[in-house]
Image (cartoon, rainbow, N blue to C red):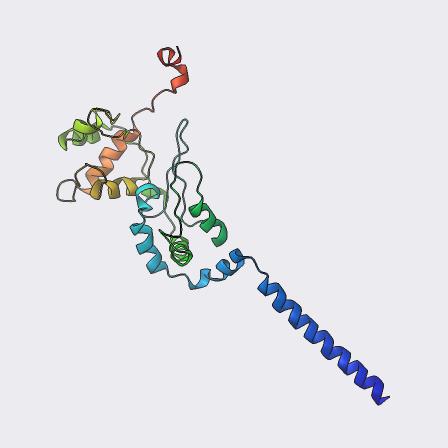
Length: 227
């Protein structure tokens, strides 16, 4: 009888040990993405905001990650706040993005940096009012566009110019906050427009004017370009 109890006890202990070893083996074989997902709770949103700004993400996605819907053939800029992707999928998309977004390799941002950006994005809840509708009368924005000399490089309708190197602005395919950020800290030869030169409200008016500009027709319907 004692021998049977001993064998039963040994069997129970063996089963417990087998279960423990199996669990450890499964954790050891866990995909890297699962390990990254566990880091979400440790992501630092404050650091993530700094990384988000340093990488220039706000210049396309907006300072609140709100994005902008596309019009016509344009897909716009996707809203990334707060992202519905799991952290592994978010990191993969940043490493190997789709469309025109440039890839961000580990030399530009570590997985830890991206985990912090992810945590920052999860804190954002952009409001609809952050993306204003096109003004009913965009003439004021057009006046400000001309007064501030924007037309000299970008044309009177923001159509851009090959002779000046000014890019096409109208209609803008980035959110208002990104438009303001770029005006404050532009790239290339464009001079920065500080708040002393043009206020956020005036930039909003200019943005609304540019939003009122119809997109160019697709090249396939222009006979001259299809000869």
